[in-house]
Image 1 (cartoon, helix red, strand yellow):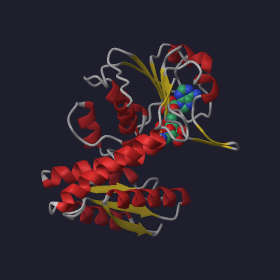
Image 2 (tube, helix red, strand yellow):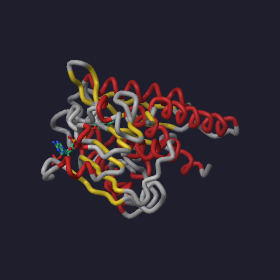
Image 3 (tube, rainbow, N blue to C red):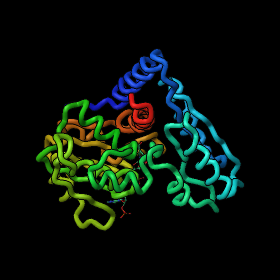
Image 4 (cartoon, rainbow, N blue to C red):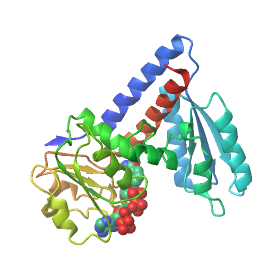
Length: 286
Ligand code: NDP
């Protein structure tokens, strides 16, 4: 059984990015820049933003923090986004969600220049993904695909089941898996809360992707012998963090599995850095 180590993979990816940035910098290129916009004092968002800013610094990416009060008006927030769009030193714009009540997240995401939308949430990038055009892919599903590539677990010709259809995880992941290519070309089934007999669907999967947010709800009897299980779920329970799979029992019958914590989670920030570096390379024609 292969235990997919997301922490080590993310660290390797971050080191590669840092090296590429350092090499270009020594040739005279400016540093990659990420504008980080946080509105309000949500404690979880503050932790996420701090972690992202620290990860940027380690990779040689300059972050431009914009920490605004919860009372910020929609007009002021949009004006800040437009200023970041126009700033030649900014390659990526991260708008930390959720926004405080009264602010329209959709309108703000739409205002971000799609070529600086390193979170991949702009409808233009979602459209590019669905048309197999190059663009920014949402960081968590991009991180899942990176794990499959680095562990050489190709999905072509395999049956993939994605449990969850959210805009940030399940839906883009299903699109990535059905793209042409060795890490694509899967026959994809998307399940959600209205799917009858979820267990029967899951048992069909050669590759099972879990993004439903229900602690340990996918039990060993729902998993095919020798399947690859990628558990995106992060659930807080009294005993600590756990995934959507009943890890102890499920891991006994699979070919490969991601643990929680230490699986997909660490890849998300690494892919945000990768997207920022990708934008910087495109902007500087590196
Ligand atoms: P959402 O709550 O937005 O979506 C959950 C999806 O799961 C929905 O499509 C829902 O169906 C479906 N679902 C819920 N219950 C069931 C059920 N009993 N049977 C079948 N389907 C079900 O969550 P997210 O996509 O944002 O996140 C999913 C999980 O991934 C969470 O645990 C979250 O914490 C984690 N996560 C982890 C990240 C990481 O970095 N590793 C990043 C983002 C999320 P319906 O559409 O019908 O409601």
